[in-house]
Structures are given as C-alpha cells and as structure tokens.
Length: 89
Image (cartoon, helix red, strand yellow):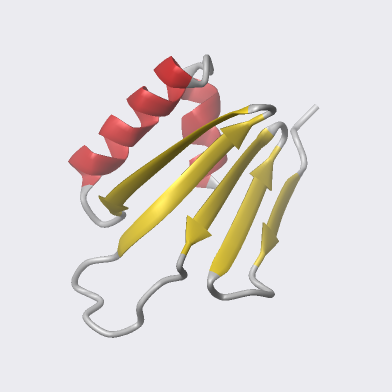
C-alpha cells in the first residue's frame, strides 16, 4: 500500500510535505525572485530523528547528496527517500 502524501502550503514560511513517516519542511519559504536557482533550507524528519540542510533544489548534485545524507543519518533507504521527493514535482 502506498504511503499517504500530504502537502501543506498554508504558511508560506513553513511549507511541509509528509510522505508516510517522513516529513520535509521548507524553513523560511521559497523566494520568488531570481528563479534561476531555488535555495532553500530543508528540515527532514523521521519520527524523532531530524536533519537540516541548505541546498539549491535546481542542482542535481546537491539534491543527490542530500538524499544520500538523509538515508544514512535517518536510517532510510535511498529508494524510499527518492520516491517521496519525486512526488513533489
């Protein structure tokens, strides 16, 4: 059974996305000027473990590095993590 996905954009400074037990929060919102890059601070949380990371979401290398870091630090598989992030596009 596919985990439940939920995107909450009510507060533009604190956007949250839940995918099963994983919650991804965009801290500080997304700047709409200068859209050649999308620099954000993400907080990824699984149960009681969490990780914060600054990155440019348009930079594939940074996104892949974050995926590996989340999988390692939060004890998730990269497949599950990638599937959860793929639902955001």
